[in-house]
Image 1 (spheres, rainbow, N blue to C red):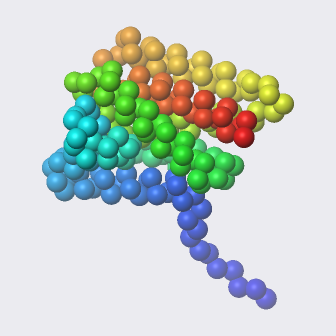
Image 2: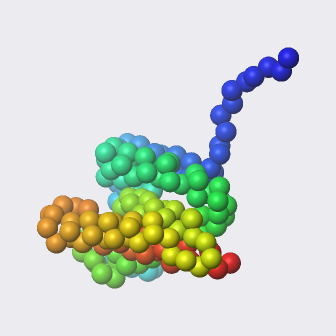
Length: 189
């Protein structure tokens, strides 16, 4: 008779690594009274001669303003990320995440020079749009993509116009666009 043993499996290395790095960044930010969050895990316009500027261009997706911000992003990341990582592979998913981080970081510096951006929301929305493309067959655009895009864009535009908060809705849209473009690019390969 075979013994059954339960083991934990690091089943989605990119997704889980982002989760643990984000958790570490949040705890480090709390331990340093926000210094590391500002210096490493937020992106804002700075001199290109500052080496940390390039760290922030990618590292901002790991930073979070607090536990609620962290939990909202990580719950979605942990639900959507693993199946996509299984479908597309870890390297491909990491490429999409890095491109989205870079695009949203650059857009933040160019379009909103007086403010900082942090959090994995752009990445999460990239993954949501990418997942809505997962059922694409024979070049036909999945209805799920159309519905998700309409609902998602509608909500983000509504929030931009009518809700006054510190949420970077434009970067959510940018993340969604990155996910859609990346999904079509990966599909063609």
